[in-house]
Image (cartoon, rainbow, N blue to C red; front, side):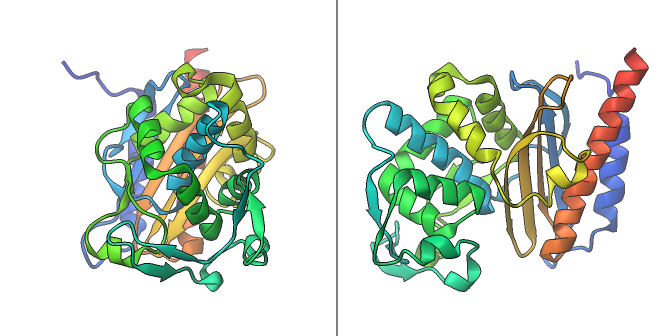
Amino acid sequence: MPTPPTKLDSRLDQAIARLTAAAPHRDDGQPVVSVWLGDLTGRPRHEHDALAAHYAASTMKLPLVIAAFRRAIRGELDLATPVQVSGRFTSVLDGSPFSLDESDDQDPETWAAVGRTRTVAELAEAAIARSSNIATNLLIDVVGLDEVAEVLRIVGCSPATVVQRGIEDAAARAAGITNTVTAADLGLLMAAVGRREPALGGETVLAPVEQLLGRQEHLDQIPAGLPTGTPTASKSGWIPGVSHDVALVRPDGEQPFVLAVCTTVDLDETQAAALVAEIAREVWGAEHAAGEGRA
């Protein structure tokens, strides 16, 4: 028998429906807005279309970095190992070469190192903190996509969440090899970080990952919708028409929670980020209104 909706569910569903209705329709259909709110056990407190699959954008960097730290703790990878920096890569489809465009990246520091080296640790930092595409592809080559898939499996992600290729691998993309996520699965991943999931390596692996997520520089989505100064560790991702964020939130004096918002909407980058921030603001307000009602 389905669980009856709570006041929290009703308030959030109404707010999300209002915000979604205000977003312009896409050429390929209606906008899709997905929300997952839960605790660190991975138990949801609210879900809104949370199982819908979205193109992952840079949220795929979260399981990648977890995989890197897991391999390091197992002694298979040294975070201090230097990696040759190049903007040219090979497709997972057929080994054909492809290049990244520096102008589409947010990481001039790593691009400035082309022809020289950066350590695995520096690449992980750049992939999360600056959402670096070049660092991400270099890290995939070092860590391996099978290791990323194992992180998703351990956490219990659905088949809808996959990381199958590097960024801008056009040949693979044309063949249907892609990276997708759901809000629910992003929530499970971040909850595992927050509770220091033993199967992922516990404190040794996940405390540094959370610290790294706490240094993300792109804070215009979920963190922007929360009260100023609220501690967050987050990973966002965006391309035209897609804007996502997942955040581990540890409010002072309150229980931590995880919020994941995925949007596939026909908005520009600034407008889409503002939509995610407004959803986070509604979640915060609804959560605290519900808490006052229980007091």
